[in-house]
Length: 163
Image (cartoon, rainbow, N blue to C red; front, side):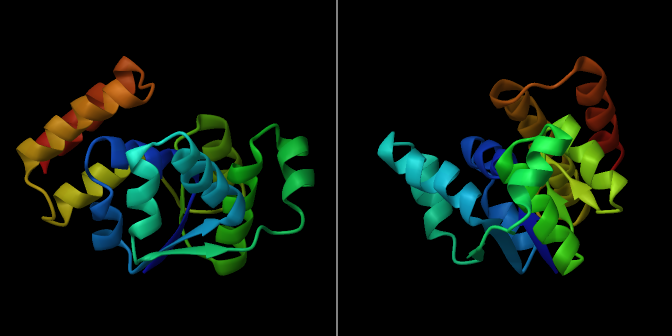
């Protein structure tokens, strides 16, 4: 199975030491050129260790940005990388990995399957890639590197506990 990813899940999972679960869940993760520039090129300029880890992941492939991305981003009020990821996911008929709520709603409106960083942790627990207690710790770590509402965090925690 393949997926297209925006910057958020790549950065968040790398910061909690779980980038590899993407490669375990998906055979290939495609990132638009704009996302590569954002997370790898600019990250390397800033000396971000996550940039090097993402660049070295053999299961991540960079794709050209779709030509309609700027227009879509402006119309929808989302970032260019999110628009590129959504358009690629639509064209390839595969899931998109997004954390931003506005971009998620927009993608869902197009009928695209959307999975975020929290959903990836839950998927990893469900697939047996990580233990339940590790998944709970990862949710706590995610809360430290990305914004999570109390409701979303508690719902995710209950789901992981039930797996």
